[in-house]
Image (cartoon, rainbow, N blue to C red; front, side, top):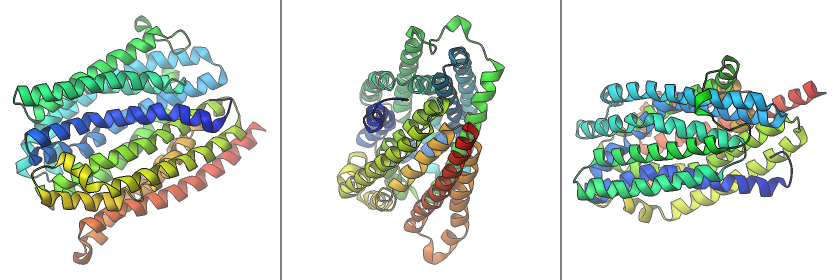
Length: 444
């Protein structure tokens, strides 16, 4: 990360993250496809209705894994091996505690949260059942996220990909067994996801235990070190708050989508899963920018950070533009994989893809700059900017423009995404430039 050709290294580092992200999405995609093919599109709506809510509940704690990764990257870049060891042994018990808290919230609060989102009665029971089973395995998901963040901070993006591939294959096999052979529906796909997450967590923890450098995990030495926990929270808590508030705006949007009825929900859920593949591909450059900048910031290589910034921004722009156009061109064939019994729902899925996938590169640019700012040790500012630019703008839009009868449409609702991405990207880019100048002066 701190030496060698930047373009080559960035792409070699990012491609496994892209593939890992796609595999993570395939967990949920497999759920939707199997229930859509064998149970009906109402089950697609039930699983899809949980996505924004699950993100809202989990993002705060996933943000802490970002803090763990950045702390490890700074320690490795500056050569502080002892700090890295303490961070690793603090991060894993933090992941376990986070998972236990999330399990309680998700299992006991699923139905209440779904009701607050105005989930239709025809979908509510199924969605609640899916969520409860999903959250029984959330501790495993936390362990995988924290473990992956540590490995990526150390430059290893291959291991998370390999382990998630193995877990993904298991997920697909169990989906088919539970739904087709045992006659289960959303409970079957949720159970398959939970079991596969347990496998990925086991493999990632085993990899950490087998490492020979400062990132090696010794299960007997797991202990929460106050100094390292404070560093993890200083970077990770604002990142988690940002993710949660980001998710709140998406929950409000999902509630607005729910108000149009189950048919629209089906199309929206399928399109949302498809566009997720574009998002994960772009978000991989966010993680690359975060870790490359983190290590180079630790090593005080500011000129290299500038080149990394240029490479990551150009790369995410091209990736988002090309993939967004492809999703738009092949929208109906892709949607038909999920929806087989309701052509009306396809129409609404096409609308979402047109309004979100085409300008999606703006979201990618915004995320990369967020990663750059966090990489140089500032996590509070991107949180504030995102809260105002993304969450605030979308909420204001929904309660003002969207309420006007003339603009009360899906097209108007989805347009809020593009506007919020543009505003937030511009603001964060300005802040990053200012922060870089200040950091360089401090170095001098």
